[in-house]
Length: 372
Image (cartoon, rainbow, N blue to C red; front, side, top):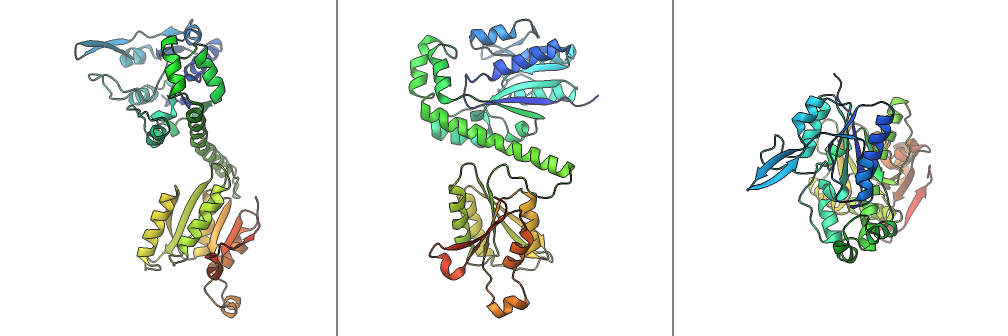
């Protein structure tokens, strides 16, 4: 028996149509002859969502009593016993009532998939663990129910259900999201244009990492070694010297010129394990990278230039920031620096930015053009 697939409908906010899209796909599969059931679905009183569910078989829920109050949850055992080809299970981040077999619904979904059932599910970005605090800063509302990002990223397919802020607010005003008693408060607070615009941007940027993963898989399968850029990704080559802080600052400025860019720093340590840099400087520079929202990496290698180039290609980089050689001009003629080797080895794959030590403090750097 094969492992079931997982498709996730990802939204920036309630009301964009995730559950509707999930149900629509369920209906399409049923028309094609697939055995489809609704394992769990919430319509929140939304008439169009309820209508989309009509005609799909629904597995009855299980009732649990917690603190003398009855609650209904997906009946996992009943869905497993029914053995459909596809199960629609809303809200993957949901926390089950105490007494359920699993604490979280995503764990229920994993059991279904282990039994060979394909699952369609939904989630809003505020429920992703990595974005939970960011969403709270934007909206002032903290979501207690979260799902590990890795669970969602491991899905076979993620579909962003996108809607502009103005369109979602119109849906809200027309009563398609909440009842009339909640509309004014929602529009004034959580569903402000600024909030929705920021949440939508977060959703698209988070999903962009999935684009990078798909491109990487395709490049690997097709034996394509040149980077295919889905977005700007700047790699800073850190030697462990004092110029590293300046390089990081320059890379930050490059990232700030566009939207959705990513900062990566790499230090190539000697493969023999011998110390080749000042640990205190690298620790400080790593903290700078992380404060800038970037990621620090350390790789082992005999040749720093080869290590940097291999890292940049593996991470689908678009630009590399490097420090100019510390050697004198005559020495560089006989012993090319790592910076020179990186420039020569980059071909047309990257833009290389060489920051000179004397002039870096004044903000001047030279560009050696590659593929943009």
